[in-house]
Image (cartoon, rainbow, N blue to C red; front, side, top):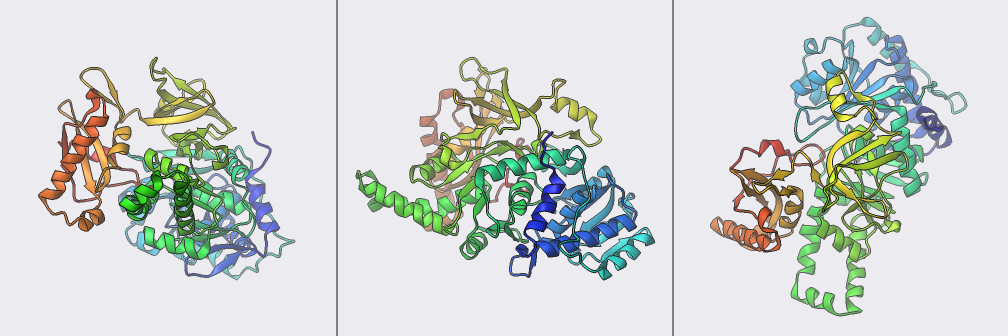
Length: 547
């Protein structure tokens, strides 16, 4: 058990940075750490006098916002269990999660509330409007009365402010995963798991009070919550929330204006910026010539590095990529030009971090860093030739299990406490971890060879006019589903069959690089984006039946 207490750390952050800007909504007002403390104080009154007990569940549904952050902090510091729910879930899925987690209070946005039916959430006694904390609906008059009283409360002074004592052993959050292969399970995370992630990250990045953070990854997901919210909060950073689903255009505008100290992203956004802004530049004949001239190529690399650095605000210490695998060729290019980019690996079940190495440590391209201090890692049943096996971990930040799902918990955590991640990977002699794909995604060919579709997709995605791809098995053969980069297609003036001909050429080029057992026999062009989870992973299970 860590000596650093999660709630005490939040208390210290608020008191230490009382007059420092804490939360802003994009193009909205800013509230200080002291004002956040005042809002927590009022919500604690609502909880206490509205009948909420320690350990009761509080549902939280909405996109990133200052009030989302305040609600989260108020619940965990009261000793309640926060249940952050992704706003991308359907109303039926949200109602199911609220029932399953037995939420007693619910904080929601207007649009989401309109689609919910109170009778389908029988444990809920009060529903609050996330925008202003007013009561949408109540099943207990005490809830409305407590809310009215709280609105009239005087905010505490800095000297009077303190948070209750909450043990690191206590359950702090139930996070419902947005998995690609099945329905959500409620991951039970203790305060110890959350503070372990926060402490490790802040030791690596060394954020300073007052520095800007742009929070656009979904906060209901463990990655965004830990590193776009909790870690910078305890360091006294100023967090600006992007409430709407961000496009690359909106994000780059925010980066330019706010100049964040850290850029957290999923691969899809970085890869789009590379393919649309950087790749066309470096593929011109003039640039290709300059990149081949010794000495001159370093000058070109420096200019490209500065251009990319400025695109992301020109102030960040680390660009951290997580949530999925980054294309290796793109990572290699960024590392070649000296861009301070690094990849990490995690799962909700670890709250989420499993491995990470900062850019200055020069982790090998293709690795996801070294396993963090709070975890042990082993590769189970490694292949004798490749060393690839299932990644398994155990340690401080491991979940307690899946809420009300003992069977799934036993299938995921063995008797010795090892978490069976379902991810395939290997460790090198220096302890760096490399991932090759999900065990559920691995394709076993008729000849007994293992095919890791993610590795093929990574290569296919680098070929002309390819935006995204998916490798599936059909009748014992490998088939590629490809979504073209429509901007590149338009620039090349390609239409109809020309696009399909180009993709067929891509298939042939790719096969020249692949061993015979994992060559693509057929390619199908799609003109609609693949359906994705909120963290931008393709929902593979929807496409397995497509021939």
